[in-house]
Length: 105
Image (cartoon, rainbow, N blue to C red):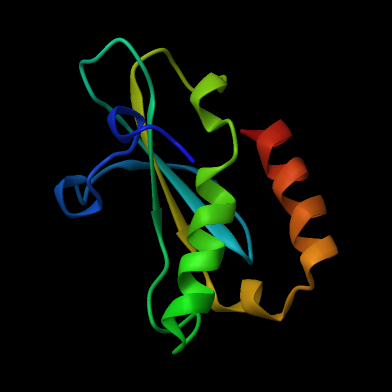
């Protein structure tokens, strides 16, 4: 699990943050945070799944990624917004997708 200081409060993330990457499954937004490290937030809304346990499962999967060592910058907040098509992926497809996204970002 990602340490608390490395997680960004989603409700405080600015609405005008720039989109770094967008796909059919996720959107990644970035914003400078003024700290010495990157922070990560994952947003999974009810459109993805009505089941809270499934949404939390997806959130934990993405939080376990090491997005703190990205090419984005040294002090950025990253917000990953999951889109509804991601719920149809199997566990293996999700793992492969996470590796692909980690390399892109």
